[in-house]
Length: 370
Image 1 (tube, one colour):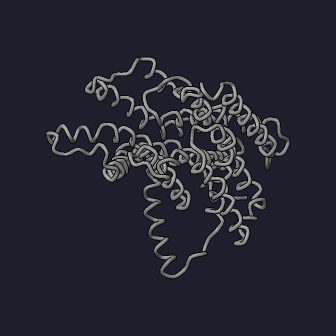
Image 2 (cartoon, rainbow, N blue to C red):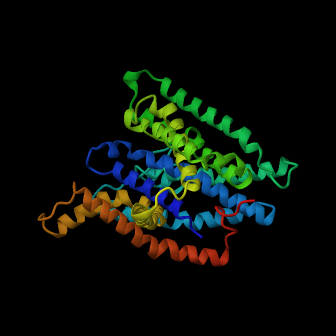
Image 3 (cartoon, rainbow, N blue to C red):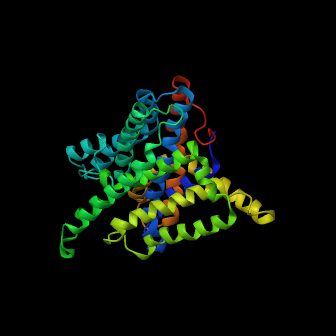
C-alpha cells in the first residue's frame, strides 16, 4: 500500500529537479537542484524501511532477493534511456565516446564522465542499494539482540555524517578560489563518499520509525511541529541564499539540506488534521494530484532531461521551423510529466507487477511498526 504523503514529497522532489533544468531563471530554478537531496533522504527512509520490514517478517535480510527487486525497479527504464540515447545522438551527430556509455552502464557516472547531467544521482543511490543491506546484515551478525539488532545505526550515522563532511571540506579547500571550477567543485556534489550522509540520515529516521517510534513523538505536538517547520525552512532556504557552487553550500550546506528535508519528512508523517473545512478539502485535492505525479517520479526523473533536449527540436523540424518550443517552460513541464507517466505505465509498472508475483514484497514498510 502506497503512502500518499510520501508520494507528495516525491512529487515535490521531481518538480524541483524539473525546475532546475527549465530555461527560466527564478529562485525556484536556482534551488531546484535540492530536489535530489530530498530524493536522497526519502530513499534512505524508504529503502531501509523495506529491509527493516523484511527482517521483522523473516528474521533475516536476503541480499539477493532485495537486489533483484531493486534491479527490476530501476534498471529497465534507465537502460532503455541509454539504448535510446545511441540513435538519438547519432541523428544529432553528437554520439558520445564508448567510455561515457560504459560509465553510465556500470553506474559510475558520478566519478567518471557520463552521458546525462542528472544520472549521477542514480549512481549514488545504486551504491547505497549495495552498501546498506550489507551494513544491516553485518549489524544482524554482530548484534546479540535479535529483536532489534540495528542499534548501531545511531552510533554509525554521526561517523558517516562527519566523514562525508570532512571529505567535502577537503575537496573544497584543496584548491584556491581562482581554480575552483565546476569539474572540481562538482566532486563534492556527485561523489558517493561525499553524499552518502544524506541517504544515511534517511536510514536513521527509518530506524527510529520502525524500532524506536518514541523518539519521533516529539513531532506529534503541534507546538513542536511549528518549531520544526521553522527550523526546516531555515535549513532548506540556505539553498536559495547561497549559490550551489559556493564553498558553504557544497560542504555544510548539504548537511543543512538533509537535516531540513528530514524534518519535513517527519512532519509529513506525523502532523495531521490541521486544515479543515473548504481549505482542508482543497489541500486534499491538491495533495491527491501531487501524489499521482509522485507515483511516477522515477520515470519522470529519468526522461525529463532527454525530453527537454530532444522533443522541442523534433517538433520544430517536423513543423518546418514554424513552431519553436526550445525555451517554452510550460511545454517542457507538461511534456516531461506526461511522457514520464506514459513510460512508467508502459514499462515500469508492468515489470513491477511481474516482479511482485515472482518475488512478493514483505509487509508495508511504512505501516509495519512494532
